[in-house]
Length: 190
Image 1 (tube, rainbow, N blue to C red):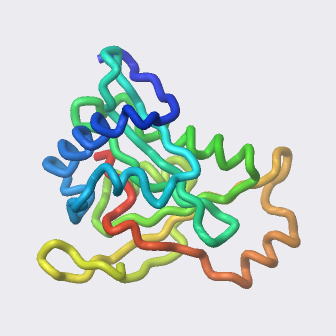
Image 2: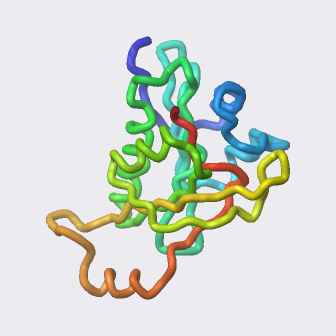
């Protein structure tokens, strides 16, 4: 497979996104709970931006969205790469596109991941994300059991700095990291 290209998601991409997501769900069980309306699940809650990776034939082989949340940060969600396109560093490239978007806006990124996602955990940690906590999801697994979530953050630092400005660091230390449920873990890239 030639290296897929990444571009902004278009409304006409949604059928391809759902087909790719169905394959990921079949192989990886992501999302943990298949949405009643997968088109709507990918579109909501009105992402600030979404991108797809498309192969030479125009088929969607990967996806990521960035959602605005009631916090200065934005949430990375709906990240997946279809099994046939794995090994091409698309997960890293899609995350990189979200990171570029956030960096241009001076925005931190957060995400949540259902515990047990070893490949996704490894990807995030290799690319600078830090686990900032755990919680129990407000939704359950298909069998009704509780779902443990790991919360990750990727901080934006102004160019030329070694960290956040002192005032930002103090403000962040006083407030908990925001998170919301996506009804399933945020990613599948294994």
